[in-house]
Length: 257
Ligand code: 13P
Image: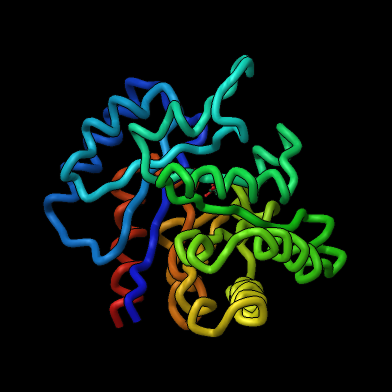
């Protein structure tokens, strides 16, 4: 199968511009030492995108944004549009739970953003996940089903094929609390089942599904060995070049086996 695993670093608001450039430069240097049989993306904050994008040429690391506004242009103070980032990035995270919580993004709006990004040649990474309360109440499968149904109702086959989906249980983000790998697998299989029902099994297998939430080089193995996730979305550990690339290396090798 021509599916390459994917490792995405979401730098959130963790680094100053100066530190972001230093971290990227260190990562780039380390990339020349080893082969990583994996697609690697890092997502700095907006003010660093232009400089890091220029630095990223021939580095083997692609650049993404952490969000966009759902309009292309206009009087939207403080917002950033796809048109403003498209020179710099080839990827963009959307639907992150931190954005959903802060901005109230609905599943429908997130789907709208996915379409907008695809129209401009940028690959969306769509985040989904359930809250701690929903997890405790045993609602994981129903919440994920709702989120996926909205996405599947408006993306066509070609769009979906290009769109990785990241399962990030909210209670695992930044907490060090890890879901059981079987639970993650169950969610990944549910997403594939839903894609197969709406489209076909070939597409269901080809769409890349990632796990995210407290991933480190020490714990990543459990989520990538076996038939489940096709990579990971990493927050905290992704601002440490050695740790992030150790994760990428393991993901690549697990997949190559
Ligand atoms: P952590 O890896 O810090 O838990 O963050 C995960 C995340 O939100 C990535 O988008």
